[in-house]
Amino acid sequence: MKKLHLFNGLLIAALTLAACAPAVTTTEAPQPTAAPTTAPQATEGPKLTAAGLPDLGGREIRIAVENAYNPFNFIDESGNAVGYDYDLFNDACQRLNCKPVFVQTAWDAIVAVMGGQGTPEFDVAADGITITEERAQNVDFSTPYIKLAQQLLVRADEDRFEDADGLKAIPGFKVGAQPGTTNYDLAVELFGEENIVTFDQYGIIVQALLNGDIDATLMDNVAGQGYIGANPDKLKLTGPELTAEELGFVFPKGSELKDPVNAALAQMKADGTLDALFAKWFLSTTTPVEITLPDLGGREIRIAVENAYNPFNFIDESGNAVGYDYDVFNEACKRLNCKPVFVQTAWDAIVAVMGGQGTPEFDIAADGITITEERAQNVDFSTPYIKLQQKLLVRADEDRFTDAESLKSVSGFKVGAQPGTTNYDVAAELFGEENVVTFDQYGLIVQALINGDIDATVMDDVAGQGYIGANPDKLKIVGEALTNEELGFVFPKGSELRSAIDAVLAQMKADGTLDEIYAKWFPLPQ
Image (cartoon, rainbow, N blue to C red; front, side, top):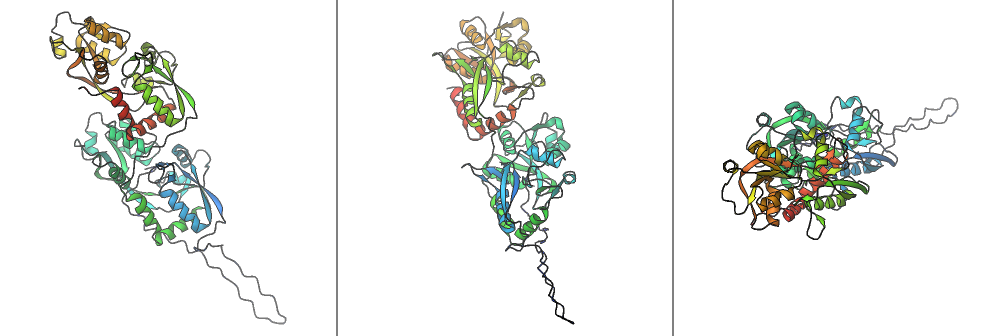
């Protein structure tokens, strides 16, 4: 894992009890000859603590932690920084006479030091870090303190594959991984970089797996069991162990702290402390999906909305701008410490940016936008937040046809669509451009349908239910699904906001907030 998530709860039995530092020795005075001489002063050995370990003299030890890697280090529900690493170094410093100062540090910064770049701003890095020969060229590692193995973590109802080879046979499969980790390296080696979806935090990967956005992730079996316990009947480990690895604490090259920490680890192993800490943090079934959010410092986020796509964003009868997108970003900015500024933007302007033309005048575009490979060449997308299907929306009293095929048999039929949308692409492909009538806004299409100016429109089922709810007894959805698609928020290419939004979406999904907002704006049909 980084990291590599922990496996097999076997703590390394090979930690050597190097704790036995040399005892203090003295030299006896020589016998007098002609005249008495003064005995030489006793030679003192290294100063030891009451625990018999090197005495660090009360010095502060700066320990880098990510605070986003449960159960090693994370922020609990009460806002406290806790975890295996905290308990271990608090105990070790009691034995070594030092003061642990935990410094929240981005994983990328730790990776940079292990890669020989940048100057370490820590004395020790503790973040479930796998010992590798490549990393050991630039940093020193402690003796191993946990052994682990990697396996595939999948949804509990997964029946398409049982191991890595079976997964590779699935068309379009996707595996989640965190860059800079050995999980990522193994995933690329096994599955190819083109099949990897990257995430900044492991909690977001697990949530993406639960949401169905990815098919699997690589995780150590111990941490995997923790996530399984926190999500009963939703997750499982599958297939054989893929690697056997060891975790160690990281020190700047040549650090004088490595030997004292190794001595403390050996003593804690010998007296059972490491086993007790392992049992506390890795053998319980209460490991939640922990997602740490960045603080955006109160900055304004310009969010492009069309205000014409009910129920995503629209103007209600009282003249207020409302909808799903407003509720999602108002809540997201509360959690991220940002100020949402909603900017009414024509759909054509958003389409132009997604087509690689023009300069985006927004930080994020939120308008029920389908994720496509073509668009992703010019913009970045958030993780999907809604899955949908395209269907036919028709008048409630329509009895001339019941699906796309029978619609095509209606003489002179017309289908409404908005250019630049995937709805338009599907309509043109199914019915021919000559039978498609274009409109600038979706609200105009729906009104034309109600008025009888067109016979149908292609619309995602989610928005369709919104329009049906706003026009009782006037509209209905007919036929089978025409496509299966996912919606994502749009960012200018390379935006630093994407990871923050992905994190908050995962947190809002995990705690049920996204489901509540969905239920509010997309009620199920009666």
